[in-house]
Image (cartoon, rainbow, N blue to C red):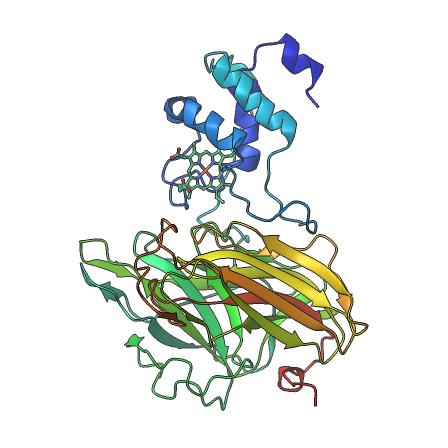
Length: 409
Ligand code: HEC
């Protein structure tokens, strides 16, 4: 509903629009963040007024791709109707500035970290030199934590050193004694690896992620992720070349748990690495199922596909075979990969399944399709595909991930 005041008084920048930008836009639209232009001052905003009107009226900004009819999300970033109306009226009224005295206090942003000051920061041991041209295989670095005991993490954030060159970053936990990537040592060299999953089990957890707009992870009080004693962090970096040589040194920051841990948070990859998408196929369907071997709560889901990804959905299938829809992303946009945080996390009994379903469009009608004549399989590069829902679950604090990944007999 429109506030009656809005109808009476002209909508002006400082009083009406600037607070909305602070609340809904500036976390990305400020220097050093994901968006191409800052929207902090009237001078910066004014040239974008028409584009802003269009973007908010169409729902393109702030970006949000989940079907509102399926589930409720704690991080739903859609603008309330009054805010959309305010943008519309402001632009239609000539985008006036209003009185500077009515401006809200500018937001204060701390040196990049959105999670507050981290207790520990781990970074790549050297700058990685990115060539001017070409496709790079994923680059891997191992960074020892040297934690003498298990550490519990309640906030974390991955920050790229060079946003223009970093496409995305995954940070994994490599447990002591793991057979994954023995050639990857802490000697400081980044290794381009194709056979990068050899020896890896889900216990080598996909722990943290950076993608444009992804932000840090802040858990609820009493929840924490666990880094076992003696584990290494494995940084897996997908660099893109920009025509000029560049350098990057990315890092991850942790805030340790301040209170006793009631729930262990763990990310389960629910994916189908066997996809084979025929040339020209407009509706290739894939599904992946995860067996729930101990009671858990589903906290959030981050779908991941590449250029041919069209839609993605996840359901819980309960032991009585009934279904509960968790998430539906009807028009997947690979530029906007994010974690959808469920507002009321469902509890699933042992014997349930989590099912993710994806549809891929390898036809010439898909404007992002780099090659409709290709047979497309699982792989790192943007021309390859992936199909994974990274599902965050809450487990009892003493749960052992080794015991967690079992299939029913
Ligand atoms: C999660 C990060 C994020 C948030 C929040 C966000 N933006 Fe953006 N915005 C971007 C990025 C990244 C781009 C450039 C890529 C694109 O257009 O998708 C962009 C592009 C735009 C554009 C240019 C579109 C065009 O026509 O080229 C406008 C206008 C815009 N944003 C306005 C807004 C407004 C207004 C808000 C708040 C109501 C907002 N954005 C919130 C990240 C964000």
